[in-house]
Length: 214
Image (tube, rainbow, N blue to C red; front, side):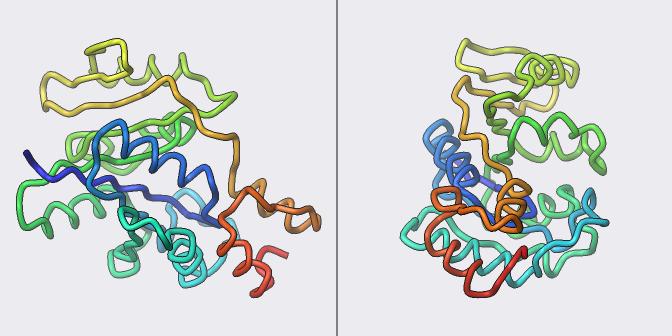
């Protein structure tokens, strides 16, 4: 059986409990050996947004993953061309793999709805399986319509879809995660509202110690 590695990319500005829930759900669903958290060096869709530095975001992830041996930080996008395109990241992991590996790209349903705007999105879909995780208020019907429009067929009632041409899967389980966003956390910090419980405790301490997002 091929190694099964989850890849969770994003800005992580900051990492929050929803990100960890996505990783935990995908690990159980797809029997992943590990999940790598990959902060974007220069997010292509957020060029005008002021964000914490790459080092700050990477450090917050590292702190959040302490005690989770199957979850690991990858800073690979700091050494890849900018902006940080998913296709370049997936090519890197395939090139670096010592043996044939199944990669599973993990993401929220809201982000998946924009996938056709990604650079070389068809190649992205052919390079990895996808795990798309819903959250309260997301448009599940729209996600399913998009999956079908991309050429995937439902395989069973668990939310597993298969593309018959290039034999890749999209998993869209009925389970959802808590409705948390990094932008909401930044807004709360700026308004001096507690974010306890929304981010891991060690990440919370780092944010306050370094006076981020104020």
